[in-house]
Length: 268
Image (cartoon, rainbow, N blue to C red; front, side, top):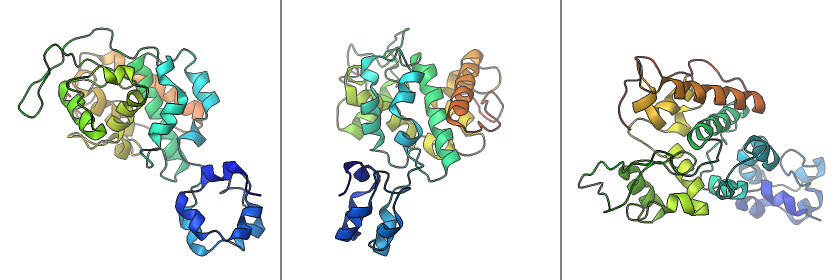
């Protein structure tokens, strides 16, 4: 009697605590739609493993909305791979606070929309080597480390660190970030959730001024601080963020700009 969709809302451990009769009463949306009788058959520990229906990327950004937002997205930016990669980062848009989670998704969409031209580009238009070589971060002969993917992963050191995270030599093969259907989304969510010298986007984006901090982490060297060279680019990011906040039904908050003395420009 268990409808298959119920498993979408249960973490694997929950099954260990479900007595057989409970399956008769589980509706697809297991968390929000448990019939009263089911509670009689749930051992207390089960509730520790029930994922809330109101959080998580797929609940905030269903496929139909994604396709409406990005009608011209390249095939490599398919929704299914985004969801699959997001599952590698269970904390992403999944704090349990609906406003914080929706604001994080809006911020993510706003940033990648600007970086990738609404997912119509997988490689930077103005390509350059972008090599800052050091003993720790080498460059491969003939390879370029210009922006690739939805967040435009750039510079040899970022390719090196991302490659380490996914167990691939992306210094030798940076082009994989723009051709591999898994890596393209993974590069963005890795960058979003990674601990960087100037912060972790996921951890700061839900705080006051979090969107400005996200922009600083992504492209602070060009768009942040007093009188940065790319002032208009940051304005476009903010406009996109506000648009997606409205679409997702959450307030964008204040202090959205990183063009202040609080954000000293530095190449990232």
